[in-house]
Structure formats: structure tokens, C-alpha cells
Image (tube, rainbow, N blue to C red):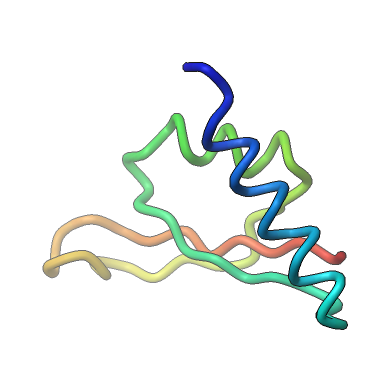
Length: 67
């Protein structure tokens, strides 16, 4: 809750942009509301869903962001 995750994510996005990447995809456990909120606040949008992806139980949300 000190902003470290946001700081690291923004550094990664900047680094990927500097390398010439044009977009980023990630997946997050659908039960991880804190992470989903962070990704959405950093411009990621849900683009897919992988049913029972984690150990045949939890779904994975696929998210995307253009750089």
C-alpha cells in the first residue's frame, strides 16, 4: 500500500516502450481484485478469459494495454 507495485509496473511499461514494444498482455487470477484494480488504473482492459486456468479452479483474466 505504498505504491511499490504501481512504481514497478510503470517502470516495466516504460522499459518495454523504450525497447520498441507497442503493447503488453498479462493474465491475472479473477479472484485478485487488488491486482485487477491496479492494472485497470494503469490503462489495461480485459480482452479475454481463460476458464479454470489456475489449477483447474480459478479463471484467468487476460488484459491488454497499448504503449
